Image (cartoon, rainbow, N blue to C red):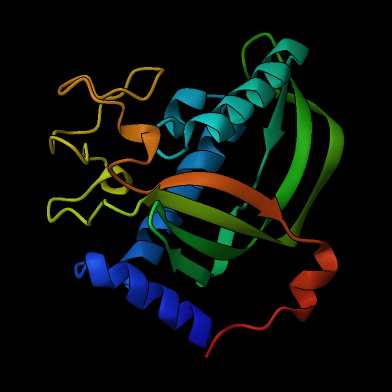
Amino acid sequence: RADLEAGIAQIQAHDPAFDPDLFVNEVNKAFFVIQQAWSERRPDLSRRVMAEQIWQQHRFQIEQYLSAGRRNMLDNLAIQYTYLVAANSDEHFDTITVRFFASCADYDVEVNDDGSPGKVVRGSRNVEPWTEDWAFQRSSKAVTKPEGGTLEDRCPNCGAPLDLDIAGVCSYCKVAVMSGEYDWVLSRIEQLPSWQYGQATLPG
């Protein structure tokens, strides 16, 4: 916990407006955007949250589902708890790792010709708990914008409503804002083994 607080202090040293509680609220929204993009097979939705490399992987996996005529369903998706587990700032990057305790049913269905979900081909309709660590990163030169950034659907460079092309370039200022140079982007997702869910302790 002391290491986490020291990391947050490192970030706030060059970005006094950074608020870890507000950051948690913002990444909770990002969590549901990405899960919606995944389940609805719409990678355009997650473009405004993910760094280039992880988004390309995300899009490729969605395209595999589309090619197979299948869809991954995440019924009754809910977050039980979210908290920061690590924070760090060096001469190049600010990095924060967030742990999500969540639950949902997780199963694949065949998609009918009319787009509706068909028969289950993998997984279960039972709701089960799971835990993931998500790492968010940005340039250590970036600071929190008063008007909000990518996680609040604002361009962190020009402040316009966030409208990105497939390359993550703002349609207003023509800057590649999903590079991490201007604001937080999701750079890594790690699913923790199921046994860790029961053993993990919450902060406090």
